[in-house]
Length: 372
Image (cartoon, rainbow, N blue to C red; front, side):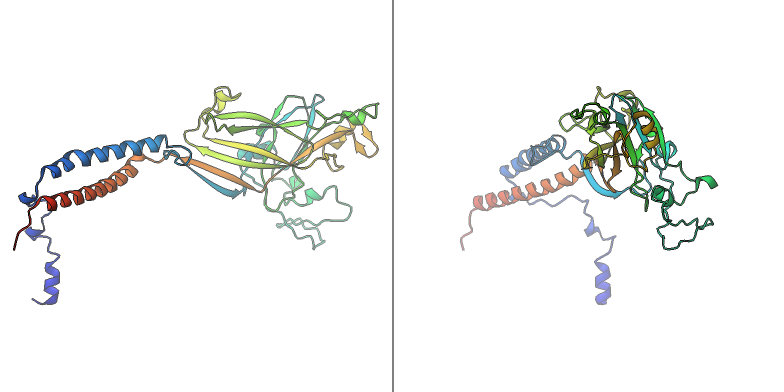
């Protein structure tokens, strides 16, 4: 038959001796009452107890060191790319606020997509091209308009996002959001100074008494309004963060949760309760001076309404710069069935093996030795 024939015979699927569904041959001499008790009572009890513990840990956990397993949260750090994030700023100065909106405006904020082209950074070529490449050069005495020279869009020729502009005066208590052109994005290669800026009246500069110092609404003219996850209740609430004049760095945690729960006391509960994504903002003060620059597009309106002291307008302001990276957290809810089946199969085999050893020891100890 040869070696090949013997090898093929081992894989004969029609060999009756390979029928694993046939009744097993039982050695009656090895059957004991203890074995029956272990198989009928102890093994199922151990599997049932393990199952109960498994589901208790899955849904409730066993404390801080052993949290519940029904939800899994993953975090990753991403770049903005072409994404535009929701942002809301409230004016809290009693004299009102002037919003200087960056390039993009309400159209880009509501679309959620940054449609700005990557600008050219080649300033070595001093020639002015308005062709297909539409390259631009930084000329002398153009410091005021430098940020506009960094964009490859030419609104006069048509196309491109809305240009940077002064949004006019906003009354105290009014919330500015995407519908008003307030949002956050980091355009690739864009001018970092082309940012959302808010300015308000500085009472200390306009007071006839030099000793007057405004430390309230003069320093905190706006508040950042953001949703956040309350760790204690596990629901989404809203808070207002007072923002100090100067330069502020915005940090973002974008939360995704298919079972997100909103607090009933949330001011926008009626419109947001069905949402599964929130933008949780935080702020870090980088500079606390807040002098309104001469290049600010709202400076003329501020000077007209509040006047000037020397070369400075009688106002203070804040500039919001988003950090180029943000954190995205995603919470998922895996099904317990498949994980449970894998776990219970392993524990049944483990307990069964241990009980088999107990049965073997009992069998050997109860079997009389055969004398030679």
